Length: 200
Image 1 (cartoon, helix red, strand yellow):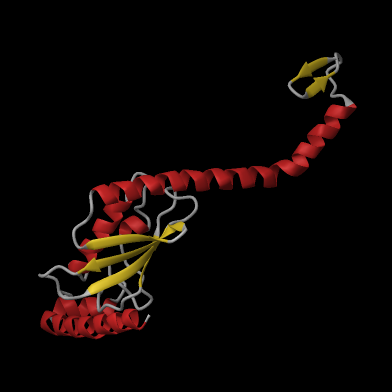
Image 2 (image 1 turned 180 degrees about the horizontal axis):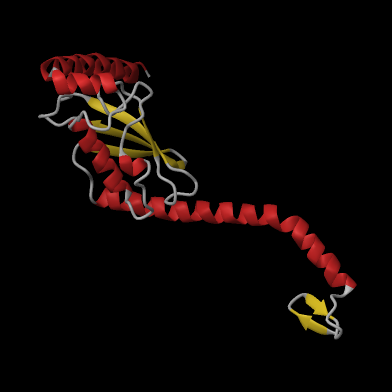
């Protein structure tokens, strides 16, 4: 009898009865156990990456943008963009959540704006149209780059690749009306957002 690791093979090349039982047990238990192990490993990998990203953002802050992880949950960030002075949304601060999947960075984060905004690239549900959060995502893309892209998208609305085609058409064909409506929404929803924060 030869012992190979924990498996025993007879000299005739047959598995012993004990080894057959062991292999059968492993086959029955391995898939869920392996899945659980992989999930835990993915979560640990994500946590290490998120901690590094947070350090980088803390050491090199993005002007006009704040980031605050939710208490006891590094996978959820509360973020806010203060609109640039030359933006259609000047005077406004727009809040959004950034949710990181447990298998980050192999899957992109999800971004949801909680402050309403009149924008061709942000729909009523608060979803933003940014290619790097969809089909152009790569694990090498940093969260600092993601946040900078979101900030640029908010400050510089474009009719290209819109989430809201009607707003995009207005921006393209009647820019003065678009700007007036964007300014009106900014005053309205920034005041509402501020009132809600004060109430709480």
